[in-house]
Image 1 (spheres, rainbow, N blue to C red):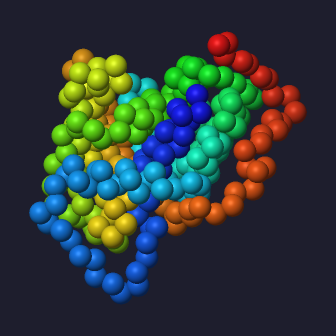
Image 2: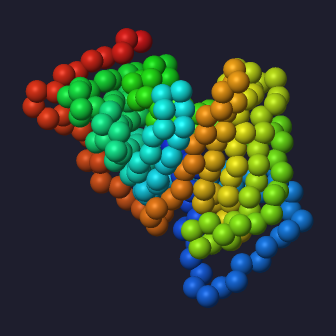
Amino acid sequence: MCRNIIMFMFLVIGLCVLGWLIQRSGAIPLVYKGIRGIELVQKMEANINNINGVHFSIKFKANSADGPIDGIIKFWGQRDGKMRLEVTSESASLNGTIIIADGQQILVYKPNEKLVVIAGKGQYQALLAELPGLGEMLYLLRQIFARGFEGVSADNLGTEQINGRQAYKVQVGYKTPADLTTELKNVTTIFWIDVESFLPQQLEIMVQKDGLTADALITATSDIITNQPIDPGTFIFEPPAGTKVRNIPE
């Protein structure tokens, strides 16, 4: 459970576009045009793994079987498995949603239903099913980063400007036998990897299955604050009076 939460956090970190970690005023980044795509994703993965704690905001836009959704997520996370997400969205079912993990269990607060749903070990996917559209996106992100990048196909498609910064555009495909069990065989991702920090500024996920296509685009909207102390109270949630509580059984 702890590893799953950690990988989800660093997914959301990778989902999460960390291009602002290095700011060099006036510096012109050196672009290695001949670098292979697999080298870029390996560098990205190594740099993400060096982060022990992080706080940032992202914007997301997704099309799924549940219809289009968009919004902003504020995220706090630590390597010990603790995390907090706060969702702002025009979708009534998602707006105000809070997700908190304390390393042992995860809860979802759904203000539109005045409901808290709590799940323990092994119930991560069932909990995300409580969040139409968004849960599907978060689950795929978790699977992508939990899998890692060994054996993937990765093509360096050149560079583009993302958020005013230059980034390598790398398309990653998953086609190994192991990807059948991680549910990634039909998934393609595009990472925009900062040419200076080798951390992702933007991530696009595309899923093709049963003749249908779903996609999500995730982009950072704030500075990324890393390896700084986070108030322990961030990972504690006291539901408002009158809130119902439902537990998902083990």
